Image 1 (cartoon, one colour):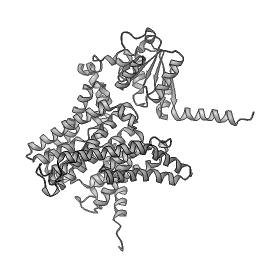
Image 2 (cartoon, helix red, strand yellow; image 1 turned 180 degrees about the horizontal axis):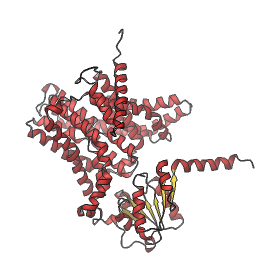
Image 3 (cartoon, one colour; image 1 turned 45 degrees about the horizontal axis):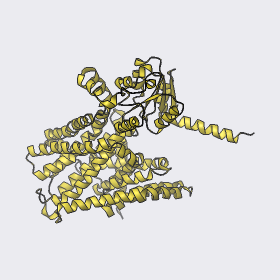
Image 4 (cartoon, helix red, strand yellow; image 1 turned 60 degrees about the vertical axis):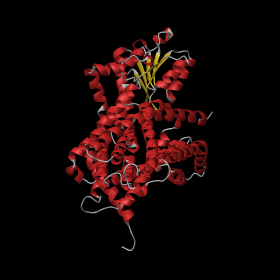
Amino acid sequence: MPHSVSLINTIAAGLGLALVLGFLAVRVRLPALVGYLLAGVIIGPFTPGFVADAGIAAQLAEIGVMLLMFGVGLHFSLDDLLAVRKIAVPGALVQIAVATLLGAGLATWWGWSAGAALVFGLALSVASTVVLLRALESLGILDSYTGRIAVGWLVVEDLAMVLVLVLLPPLAGALGGSAAHANADPVWQTLGLTLLQVGGFVALMLVVGRRFFPWLLWQVTRTGSRELFTLCVVAAAVGIAFASAALFGVSFALGAFFAGMVMRESEFAHRAAQESLPLRDAFAVLFFVSVGMLFDPSILLQRPLQVLAVVGVIVVGKSVAACALVLLLRYPLHTALTVSASLAQIGEFSFILAGLGVSLGLLSAEGQSLILAGALISIATNPLWFSAIAPLQKWLHARSALARELEARDDPLAELPMSTDARYLSRQVVLVGYGRVGRRIAAALSEHDIPFVVAEQNRELVERLRANGMAAVFGDATDPGVLIQAHIARARVLVVATPDTIHVRQMIEAARTLNPGILTVIRSHNEEEAALLSHDDTAIVFLGEHELAQAMAREVVRRAAPA
């Protein structure tokens, strides 16, 4: 050929094979993700036949990570991160420490050096935000409080890994790595510079970016060109990610995440998310294909017990540690199980850490293959752990006294104070969720002097509501104990105002068991779910898009109809 077509070959082979294997995976009731990973293995250098360009695939995957993290930022504001900081920050840091100790202990037992053990443990400690995002979106719980905890937890992990990636090179010599890659600057100086760089980038984005980029999006929107709007969104995501890495030493993923966060301030954020969705999906497939290309399948035959041990640390060790931490912080069992499932995999930062460890002479090629094997298996099985949450929670409640005690433990926020006004305890409204929709409903109830009790999973929010004199209980409303504390047995109406519609029927069943005649008013974003719930004569379902269309139509008819 007169010129190189490696890029075309890589994209065509990667997407084409991913389509075929993804389709077959779905037909046999496996996640399509399994097919994408297998496509990468097939076109990788460790299997016979066509071999795609690994360097080009890695760069395409990096773009995929940028766009996906940009999408996370569009859904996750700084206020959301601050709202979960009391659980996400300590939880993520302690979980990283526990998982690193488990992985390092395993590597030490195998006779590896201290440096190799440290890199290995760190690589097993950090989950993939990309994988988590896809899982939460598919389950419809990305915007729920539990979803925000999981995403916030992984954002803290990503921030911690940025520091690790900068500190490893200067520590390489001391840890037994290649002295050629060691940084001569003192560790404290490197750490201080890194903190200044990250802090400078975050400050710039929050102070300047939050004003400039929404303004830019508005100027482009005024042109009326859809292509320019899409170009602006993609250019902002990739451009900010690149600039953050070039100027501040921040990872592409973190830069793209903050780009999405500042774009969220624009009134066109929802449109930006929709416009970038096709590109995000396409490059996400290439990301998983590129991961598969790094995997040497022979490790499964040569080191099966070691692979099993690695998967055990990722799926069991990290998950148990996270579950225990969430429960210790006095959050519901369902939240603990969801966060545990979210962390039962490793991803992009693990691959970067492993590659850096190899380049610094700290980690062997075998160690890198073990990390990749653990990543592939944990990513492929991750959807199974999410699907197991509900039956596991039900099984634990039925057979474990400890599980029931954890839900009904002595928590001052899990029950109404004895001094609660008596009017809140009879014929009141039980309002589940105090987000954007719940707040407006509560304001309307207060305006009409209708008593209500809020049931909310955000501990800090419950504390603030009580400080303002509102009746509120902390906990998951799918648990009958929480509804009992909200005095559901004597309530007039149950209002479900949370975006998490998966467990609505559980809430309704629990409420009907305690109060057979209660009226339920439900918020829904899913037409099929809304249709099922609307068959209930005592349930009133509001579908977001439907209600918006009706309100707009009424206003148009009122103003356009002839006098």
